Length: 403
Image (cartoon, rainbow, N blue to C red; front, top):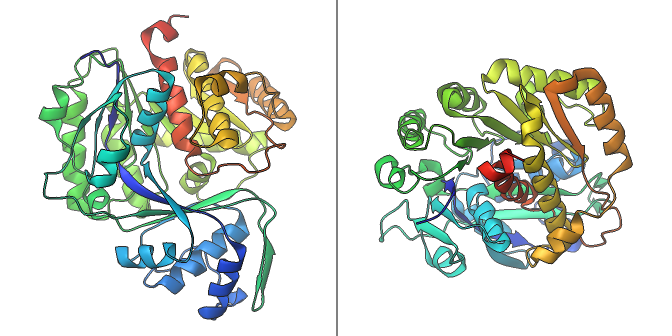
């Protein structure tokens, strides 16, 4: 086969909820939730707890991923809303985007059920990570909300400060994240780029240790000059994140994360337009992760920090363009939409931020502003990081790296 891009391992079935303020306010009243209960970090042992954490993160303008005690809670939460069934998981959604752009890829999945079979594009050669009898559907519920939405019920009354998304799942396939080093390894020997998804949903240390050994074995099948990008995540068990980075650092070329993941890593909230705060945060990740290039993508800018950061120019521009295309067009974008996005003016505040970063860090950084999408009335806010990854990968192919 002629695929140059490999992807692994996360695949999931997303229930993309259609936001309804009346539903949210009705459930606040039904569960008798009050303002002083809204906490960002509680045990998610009931549907009521899902609502509490979701509301707290919407109020704070912070995205989150939560793992309730049962998958049934996720379904019950979703059933209050209308929703669309799609495929998610960073490697999978990136593969779908690559297919739309005309790039074939090879993917090892973490699940394989009726929705995966129905929705997976033909341009992705799939190795199922599970056997034919393991076809249960564990939905990943995606709650997305626009900026400026007022939520008012009981004594709760706030306006959402930014577009946001909350991810809710209890996915047994993702919790065990299968990795097939020998079988998949034989399929990736000619690949120039590998996108490795996050292991953020794993909760068992023994399972994680096993998957790290298998992942290291798998990556050894790649050509020596292949580029390995790891898309990070907000880990349920935060100590697992450090462990994953340390284990895989010798084989990872680029560690990519969004603004929420950056802030979780450094353990505090920062203003993403404060150049000094971002510089300090990125240097901290660089010094502690052991990975050569640190990539951070936000709503205002995207940057790469490390030696020869400029080699990521084409990749970074592709990622920003693709994320902006999804934001304004949703799933039904075309290659023409992608090309037209390139001509959209940059965010003024993003331009100023990038100039300050270049003045401070010089050749150690490559930073570009995001597009000014303030005119978009009905944006898509789910899957933007996955879309960024999908747009990033073609810019890492050899022909792009040489330009």
